[in-house]
Image (cartoon, rainbow, N blue to C red; front, side, top):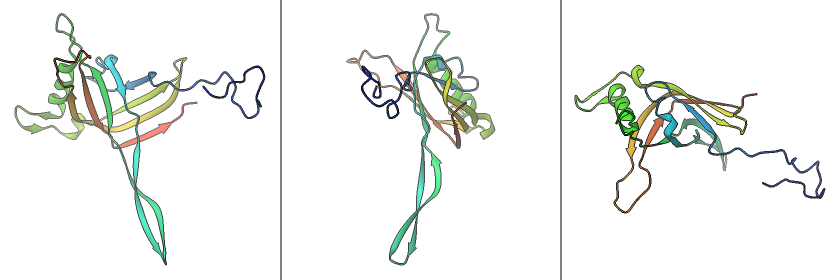
Length: 177
């Protein structure tokens, strides 16, 4: 990591101290409400919330001036290992598809549930080495817009996983103190 002082070389006023640590990608905590809370232990990848702003163009004489317009939060993707226990009791794919079928869309009866049944609030935290929260994202109005299992191939030996795309209405980002 840049910024270390070696043998006293460097200016301590300009260089960060050697006690500084970077955030790590593998330290995070995703909190969802039932029924997925039991399978989140198998989550191995989650994207952080990002947003895009529309650009408004203002004509001012011969100049074009740009201003931010409405913004939207991009979907968050969460990838979970597809785990099946020997007794068949712990199956992440079953839990995910049951959640989808029992709260979002009942494909066998071709019906959609009420938004209050599937829109949930969640949180995503980036954790420090001591377990403290570095960044906290409060996610409002989350719902799964897509559930994608991994492809199957005889030539692959990788662990099967399932990716869930969560739509998000609003995100409040903060740095806990």
